[in-house]
Image 1 (cartoon, rainbow, N blue to C red):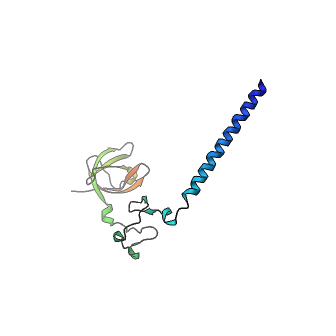
Image 2 (image 1 turned 30 degrees about the vertical axis):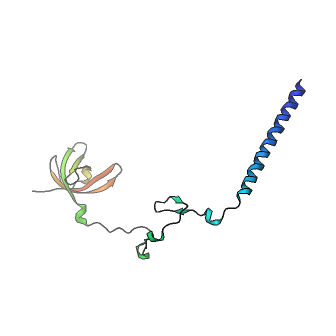
Image 3 (image 1 turned 60 degrees about the horizontal axis):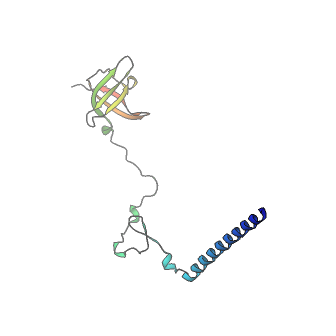
Length: 150
């Protein structure tokens, strides 16, 4: 009885192999019958939005680009005016024991951290000050903080 099951199993495997081979041959015949695609059928174009399309672009919509407008390499930034770097604000919080505080900027209304090491003159809460900023590990830090008289 075990022998008949083995032969049945072999027959099933053989029939599956033949079926797969027929399917493969049919697909091959379909590809051959379809003929070769021409080069024009295989070309893909990119439209103005960066999407692939099979229609060629309209030559009337073509834009002219001056070679002088193309910049290679990093953009050269102009150094900001030193007067623009100096900001003004009011001391909103100051802890003398720990040596830090916050300044509320007049223009942007954002709080900027400062440390006593960045003070050029003595300040207290609600004093009007001028300061410069630098990028710190947790955001902007005020440096060169001076008291504004008047």
